[in-house]
Length: 380
Image (cartoon, rainbow, N blue to C red; front, side):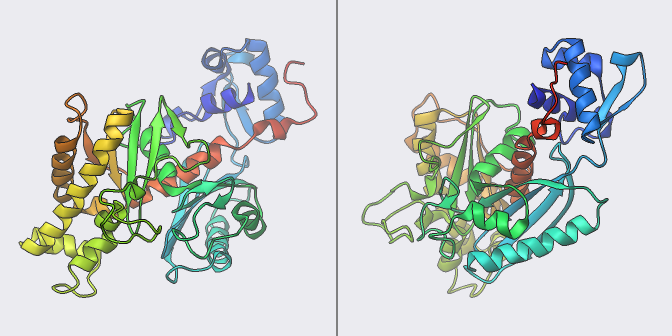
């Protein structure tokens, strides 16, 4: 009941301030609760400092909004060589963010210490209020709150990641796969927001996927759903870091593209390869298109099985735009059933920030306002 009230009160995180306020009468309509019940809940949350009311149109016509002192949530996005940190309000609306490089494959303690420093700096620039929840994305399968594959994300293996993060950050922490968080963000804020089912593919140093089915994130039985990067395309193909051969990741990651171009553009970053392709480099264009073609082959299996409304390409690979999209669509059409062969394949609207913004949304979703009114009865 309280969760329904909070969701109605905070509205869409991208809609802006004009939708920040709700009358109690509207809250009753949106939640399906009796007006008297809404009044009691609002009273309790106001006493707890979560909501504030402004008179207007009678007692139950009062405008309700989140209090400035209600608190904050934070999102963390860890990669193999970076960490992003964002702070938002209880609606998941972004207030401040930062992104910094990490040493390649850092151990979890150093990475968390860097994130804590960044988080403290962001909070220091905002009005004083409690940090209520953190959600953290990692580029690996997550089982419980632990990394499910040491070979995919070394430095975090054998660690109770949730407990380690809570000790380092001083707040309750939810641990999630980064592609899952990207899927949530694109579904609620990005290019997939009008689709009830979508598949998000994050392609950077690794390749991961997140699935939204009937407006809900699908994690699978043990939290490993969506690991498209380790679909086998050729069992005699290149050795993958997961220990298998011929995985999509061995053909379509940005590291693969960089390795293919190492002779002509040594030490080039992926963005520089994209620039070279646009400038007329046939080799650079071919390297990106080959990655896209293999991606399309893997996507054919996804759309045949799940029939999503849209496939969204995110991560660093999204920088390639049509260079990778066109070949991915060709690969998809060659191997998908006719009924799904034209499934839209598009670039993320949120870019490299998708997983970070998704973490912020998940953190806001998991703030339990019932804890703020413990000891009170909302129906009094």
